[in-house]
Amino acid sequence: MLQTATQNPGAIATDSQLDVELRKVFKVFNGETAVRGVDLEVRRGEFFSILGPSGCGKTTTLRLIAGFETPSAGEVLIRGQSMTRVPPYLRPVNTVFQSYALFSHLNVRDNIAFGLRVKRRNQSEIEEKVKEALKLVKMEAFTSRFPAQMSGGQQQRVALARALVNRPAVLLLDEPLGALDLKLRKQMQVELSNLHKNLGLTFVMVTHDQEEAMSLSDRIAVMHEGRIEQIGTPNEIYEHPQTPFVADFIGDTNLFTGQVEAVDQTSQLIVTETGLKIEAYPKQHTQTPPNSDIQVGDAVVVSVRPEKISLNSYPVSGAVN
Picture (tube, one colour):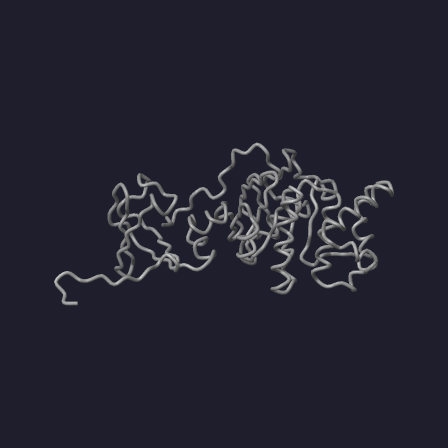
């Protein structure tokens, strides 16, 4: 069951091993607020996704972490160090874009080596790390090819290798699979998951694809109109939505608005606007404890997933069957 009052979607974790922290971050463009007071923590080594519809502020949030945008207010920290005014090239993060952003005049080997050369690493180190990165993404046979000579999936692998070759503290993924066809996207989801498990790096991904976020992520932040509505595991987001938006955006559901008519230690009776009576058992099915502050007369929203509905035929007392 959902209360209409907003709960605490950005509850701060107690985990001391944090790679990314956003503290009351705002971003305003020409008087329009794109990000509204976002509090966010990403734990070291987790696959964290920011999920939401177009225009919700998720890509702006990722750009704030990367340093491509500067907060209008608030603070951005990476591994406990403030990065709010630090330029992108000095942050321990790398970004993979939906467009891949490969250099068309460079072959695979030189695209991957580019960042190492900018950092003036010696040639033997560059060759060793490029070789490791190529092996990681299974592109050893394509070292001399140029971007125009490769498929979308191959270009995506090269973009990943280029981002990973410097072993950043955090890998940022801006809808990395959005330009791929469905079959290739499924394949790359598996490869992305395997990369994360093998490397143990922190991944922060932005996506509007619910299935992608639910299948890849350790935790998900659901954004709406510049705010974080809820942060939780895929199961928590789906089974225990904290707001009507999250319940409606994730998967399919039936939403009923109504009022609480009765409350006891184990259940709550809700009467909807159409007169339908729904008995909810929060102790068994939601995160709301039976002694919560839900009172008789409160306005609530009830979410009922289709797979939770069962139809039964019971004999009616006094009827002839």
